[in-house]
Each structure stands twice: as C-alpha cells, then as structure tokens.
Figure 1 (cartoon, rainbow, N blue to C red):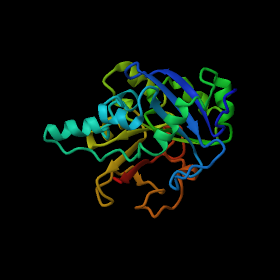
Figure 2: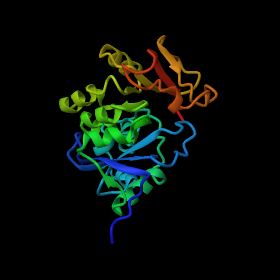
Figure 3: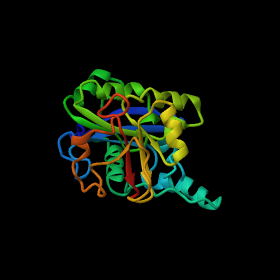
Figure 4: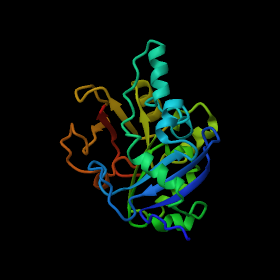
Length: 254
C-alpha cells in the first residue's frame, strides 16, 4: 500500500548535523493547517530534530547538542552552570512532548514527503508564506543553502541562532552565512556587545520586564510585556541584518 503523506508537513533536510555529525532532519509544518501558537501566528514552523531519539529523551541525555549546539537554555548546560555555582539561564520555552514529539512520531511513520536536496522544490513550498527558522533546534545546525532556498520566494521570515559564537569555526561560519536572515541569540551584556561588533542584529532574553535595555533594543511587540500588540507573522522584526527594522529585540524570560 502506498504511503499516505501528511500534506501539512514536508522534509526539507535530512543528513548530518553540522554541529556533531549526527543524523538529523528538518521538517516544515503548517503548510495546510495554521499553527495553534497565538504569538507566532500562521508562520510555517520548522522542527530540527534527531532522527534516532525522541526530542524529550535527547534533551535529557544531552543528545540535543546535535540540533541545539551550545544554546545556554539546554538542560545539560543549565545543569552544568548549577554545578559550577553559576546562575543558569531560563529553561527552553519549547514544550518537547507536544509539537516536537508529534512531528518526530509522524516522521518515524514515514508520513512526510521528502524534498531535501531539491532547492527549487523547497523554494516552491515556502512561496508567499512567512516562515520561522528553528521552531525547535538551531537553523545553523544544517547547511545555510537550505535556508537560502526557503527564503527565495517567501513572504517573510523570523529566526534565531546561538551558533554565531560556537567554538568550532565551521559552525560559526555556517551561522554567519545566515546573518542577513536570522538574529543572534544573546544572553549576557558581553555577548550582546560581541555580536554587535560582528554586525549581527540580536535577540536577547532579559530576566524581567523591568531589567535594563541597551539603547538600540526594543521590546518584542508580540510579547506579553508589550501587550501582544501583534504576532511574529505580521511583525517579522526578527529577520536578521537584512530584514525588517534596525533595532535589536529583547523579551523577558517566560
């Protein structure tokens, strides 16, 4: 019997993680059904996950490094900070037993059409749509050409990477190829300053809505602290150095 594909999603990359070489997959969803995420709106979501372990188990074991790299919000790095007597960053806001697990299980059943490797087919899927790079996982975990194809005919984008400062040069360089399209995720004042020196626009999580801001920062207008003035789909401020606006974006931990 022929496989009945889930037309709401498609595989746009399957291959080695550029971070550690593990087999990973990137699945875009929301092609036919609007995301239930009220903050992001009707953006196409992209899930960067390992092919061999559930996202939740990967986070527990540390295998999520393949898709999340050196993000300070990973459980393993938060535990390391605590062990060293440091204040850990806020936990990752992605609820892994919800959408990531559902997407992973659908992938295991072979329900997603695979168009990885075909830049033209990828570009066609995202034509006139707004896309979120890395709804879970870091976009720099895969070759930059995939995202360039995604953005070719897209109506807009949002995205973030922690790998702009990764210790491995090849990973940093791949992230740098996305500088015009995604934001550098920063956690500290020092990281903010370093990213700005490297010509990144930044997205920073601050401790509270009252915490200090840098002069070029503005509060995320789709956040609770800003009164949910808009959605990510409509705003698209988090679209990199060549995207909408010039300000850096800040949000309170949530």
